[in-house]
Length: 171
Image (tube, rainbow, N blue to C red; front, top):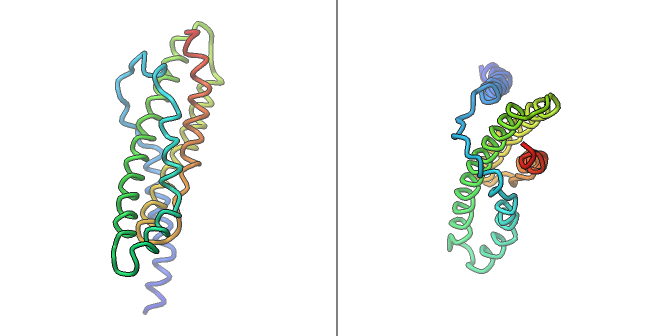
């Protein structure tokens, strides 16, 4: 009987995870209103401090400094997980705004821009897959399993920003 449950779990869990990821990819994002000046004000430097928060050396140091049973490392880990979740929300919001800016640029451009539309779709797929994987890593990281790598989430955002910034001035 236990083997039957184990077999069901082995097949059911990936199916549920795949269905969830597919729904997330196909869901329409909650797009903010378009602000024409937002693209000019946006900077990727906003995300640079996160590299420091992802470094686990501080956790090791806090655990060694406080000694066993002090809980400083645990509190630091919980605070970092909360910050990572907020960081992911900010990444998603900014990526959606960049996609909206890209659509507006493609729509109102004086010349046809099919390569921009194709690149937007490719980057959206790449970002959404990386975003969902990062969310899973944050959950497992909060349980003490593995670390969180957000570089795959930031990369599509940086690529899209680099493509739109020179274009925004010519529209």
